[in-house]
Image (cartoon, rainbow, N blue to C red):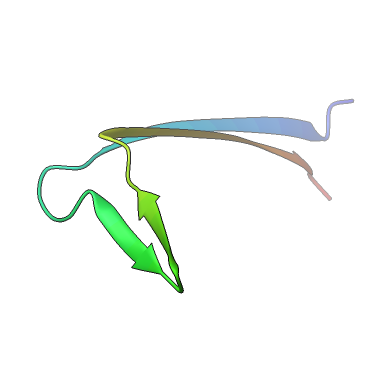
Length: 46
């Protein structure tokens, strides 16, 4: 298990300007004010 690594990452996007509703085909998508995201990379050293 000495060759295993974990790399966490987190971010937060904030809508500061622009439209809150975006047209996509014949539907509308409402953008949130805050958009959190996170990931975890798992890897092996060779």
